[in-house]
Image 1 (cartoon, rainbow, N blue to C red):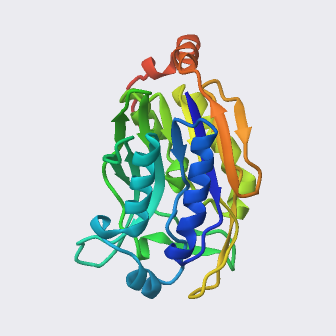
Image 2: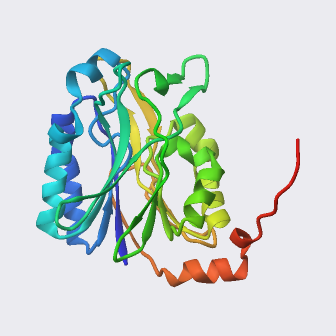
Length: 276
């Protein structure tokens, strides 16, 4: 199967971001991709809770989701919308960072709400509190498709290997990791973590990414790492998108999943233990 990973540099304006996403999606389809993947925060990156409140929509009325579903149906391809910020009915008013798997008829085949919130102090000037605006999900998801069984994660989830092991044991052959990875931590950890998750699970890891500087009209903006990657089940990096926006293609042979797991059957070797 051929996959096409989009690498974007979005702003805090969904209407401004959408045409570029659609153009790259069409480029991916023209290049033969059967599964197209966009990064985390496809609709916007914003550090302003007030702007998010004014701009975000509930899932049922989100313009980005509607247009991308139509594009998938028109092209007859599977589409992973890495994530969209969407409003929820939660009493505290927090949003969901939600990943969508769209079927070739435009239907929503699976949803996944990011479980692990990016609450970190990268440096004195790089401080993030995702949980202030977004509430964490609580459900791991493996989606059945005619192509493969796909486990869904988002960005900071990457640092929690238990989730990936659960997805692999739940049947995943591919795990998606759409991201807007910080440029400082990305330079240090992005590739090695993706390769580790592939090796531990024997899965293909597909990681579309945000890249570059993201201007905000209602905030200070931020930098993301880029380097959308596809990693094979044995840990080889098949493609690296670098830091430019665009589409990166990879051809996957799912037989490599069974081969890797046969050579190192670690998923069957769990043992109970005590402590600490």
